[in-house]
Image 1 (cartoon, rainbow, N blue to C red):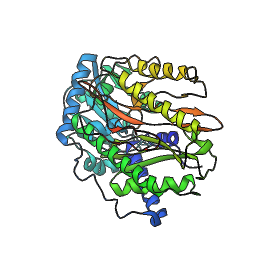
Image 2 (cartoon, helix red, strand yellow; image 1 turned 90 degrees about the horizontal axis):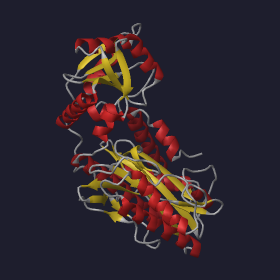
Image 3 (cartoon, one colour; image 1 turned 180 degrees about the horizontal axis):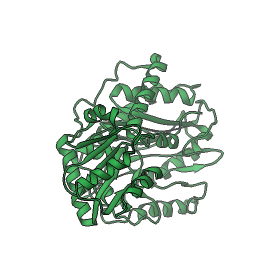
Length: 430
């Protein structure tokens, strides 16, 4: 069974592992699709730069300001997107703890195994103290010592909700004067609101993915399997300069399952083709879904596609600064119910949320989902993907990501005009 989007997201819990895996996937795709490489596809990512040391340092300062407001003494961060966000370090999670400690004031520290220290120092984009532990020693002692040295061995210590239990338990057994609290108010206070540079990187990632779609659309032939198209798409994104490449390709009845199925399908006349693909540029993600029909669409295929297209526009128009994100999801479902879909998550209809946050991770907070009260504000980035799925027949999903500006929502990529012109186009930066 090909890797689906949900499986990929699980595998990318460690940001460093994600990068390595994406490169491997892209490399494999390049080998297996050598007969379908296009000389017309050249890298387009050379005009964007990675996040600088000064930007990483600015993020730490902002986190420290938020820690003061929240009454936190420090953050303890495991490998993953947040570690990379603050320190530039791309690492992975294993039984050997490597952790970033950000104090309320002063220099951060990294605790890592002795033999990993040279690699950690090479990966760091900030100035930080590196404390090491030997194989027979407890890493938690070094974290505790780092906090003691900063006179922060009491008070509230923030942990992300993805921190593993053995890490939390091991640290708190030593830090007896401390209380562990959620780090999300600080982490999200930084990561949820993208800078202009972050938006530029996401814009470029979306450009890569959209250009790859254009290439794939021109290559489709009757008899192609889902795996064939997935390989062409992965190779195209790689050639264009994307990394951490992933993709989901579904034909015919399989398109009614949002995250895939083991059904083996091939393209035939009238096939529904649903693709959900993305990549990263300097660690920032794209996520675009497109659905079209190979050949002449049926009346029902066209009607459902048009309903999803309108659902996307309703979500976009509802997504205004100050609006609770849950209300965007509600607006789409209200429209779908007038067409006989649903109610709520019932099928046929929209069985998943209308969209999710996106940035360094493909799925981040906050979401377009019923009941979410967080209000939209400038800098937030979310997907807009209100699909409709009809079990036993087909599904349609159109997905474009948006970002909030001072004047409201803006597209990274504009939705396609119609089922006859199903690709859309890159939107200029607002």
